[in-house]
Image (cartoon, rainbow, N blue to C red; front, side, top):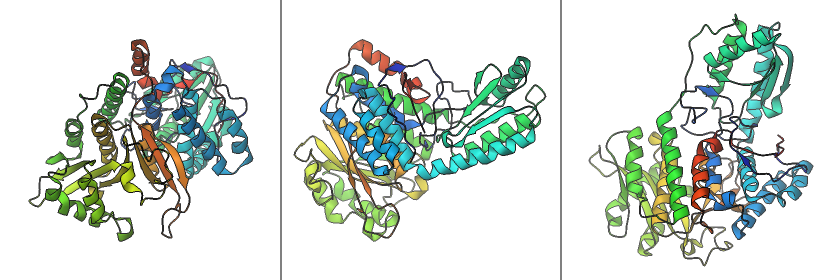
Length: 476
């Protein structure tokens, strides 16, 4: 597995004036198509960093520079992640983790965790870069001089013959919707895993047209792939979360209000409901039907587990009801309860937070297959709001290794990190049976000053669109 650290790594600080990213280690973002959300009219910006990096914003240690017991847990998670890869380079990189400041630690942990979960996509992307760049050179070898490629970093570069041609090529590239890095007459292209397959195809289509027909200008129509409304909502959610966690003011967080603002994208007639002991009986048949419709028998939560949750008085639960049908039908639901209620789940008895009554366990999140493609992220975010408003200090849960990588990317964006790695946890014959047992902390150990809080909020666009650590050497 590629790794991001070497022994030359410098803990470093932040710099926010850069607009590009360094490599192939960032995840898919399920419905955010715009490659640079800080410049919302830009169709294809090489280096759009997908949402897992939002997770850095959820730790006050990132911005105050303070180590904590929580940072030690993240440090251990990072070490175990590298050691699991089993190669000498990753094992040697473990020593470098001990020297990392909180910000650098979280940055590299998130990136490396995504790279592990999306290893197959990474290999496919590297093969595509090699194949497509070779085809590009055949289209106009006279224009593209001194070509170089590093497919393992999803990177290629070339020269053009003069400054005048370089000016023309740069202008035409921007008209084609391709933003690039230029140094004198040389152009560098750095792709990453934020590209979905259709976006990658679009990029190479534009590049081929640009090179094949280059006459000093762009003569084709531009292609824009964007969903600015979804991006704007994600930014606003994280800004609200940061301000609330920093100031310990959670009364303004309303999960139902947030869901109502987001459900319009998934269709009319969808109504969110907070489930409680008082209304559970009304929705119980629909909950069990949802489990039966979505999961095979081995993956269904038994009815008495839902009953136990609501009888405990600690239930946090949200359902989205489809009011377009006569019979009560749930199309999305999420449940959590105090951690100590779930000792039957592997990993819970070994959890160091087992006796902490402010720590909850994410029992279930289910989305109707007809409504997938962003609703899972919205439900997770709504549960965070509900949990904060009810004084929950952190949420623990489980993700299946690799097969639930999309949900793990969402969990990373909320500040999650691995507490335990449970081998062969799933009792089936499928691949990747390991389980990531994670913690998502909600409350900050330190309050930020007004100036620090302002810095965090102002840095949100830069953080997820090329915000780099100063002097940190990154290898792929």
